[in-house]
Image 1 (cartoon, rainbow, N blue to C red):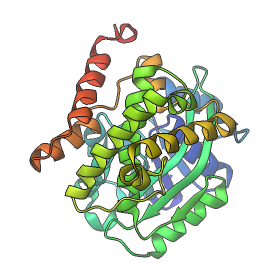
Image 2 (image 1 turned 45 degrees about the horizontal axis):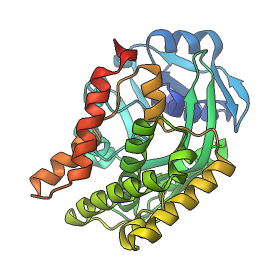
Image 3 (image 1 turned 30 degrees about the horizontal axis):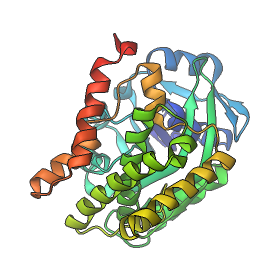
Amino acid sequence: MSVAEYEFAILGAGAMGSIVGGHLARAGHRVVMLARGARAAQLEAHGIRIRGLSEFVTPVATLRDPAQLQGAATLIVATKTPGTAAALVPLRAARIGVALSLQNGTLKDELLREAFGAARVLGALADTSGELLAGGEVLFTRNVNVLIGELGGGESERASALARTLDAAGVRAAATPQILTLEWSKFCSWVGLIALAVSTRAATWKFLSDPDAALVLVRLVREMGRLAAALGIALSDQAILPTASLCHLGEAEAVALVMRSGAHYRVHAAQHRMSALQDVEAGRALEVHETFGYATGKARALGLELPLVEAFTLLLAAIDRTRDARG
């Protein structure tokens, strides 16, 4: 297949990559999934199978060797964060129109700029989630928004066009002129959510509804908010949790706000489990060093102390090394 025939190349065929790639393929877009091993075999044999918020099966082109990709109009990175830099190396020779990442954290933007140049990189974040099941189906559990924008700020037609395409395909999306603020707002909340998901091993609504867990989460988000402020990045409530409010309200009010979010999840997304919890139970590597470690590294460079974030960085790294599921 020639370069022009691929509108979208999706690096990573886990839950997020399959949700995005599957909806785009079902809508008639020319999509190639960059996958390997057993997952590639599942896609080749059965296509992408989605259930939950959407119910469909669609065939999709699959490429096991990313070095064979000659080019695509849009590259969407949807792998787990460990090994991202190495995964991008064989794609550097490809002709990529624009690249964006739906991964967690903000290191992703630096890695994409290094691989493809700043002019070809958009910022993005996904308040969208699912779970790759053992049989290869993907359970689509949350479809709030994928936000896309220029990392330098402002409006752009390429960001708007991509958002319209995703939204029309069934994955809710919108363009934003403040993607850096929103990426960091999500990152600050995500750190708290992941820390509690892995330490409690509970569904999202359960730990958000617990007063002690909510308090720890609030304190984690506030430490991350201090890091964002030190980097000169404003925060917003347009995130998984209302990050700006959690940083500025009194502590008791912030805890109550988190617990209200737990009540909302219980009603509207009772099956939702954070991706890190899924990784723990499946024996997959946790996203620690590229996310928590990235934050603590930035803080040290600024002479900023984030004791709770650093403690959970160590704890999650220890869990990753010692849990029985990984031998």
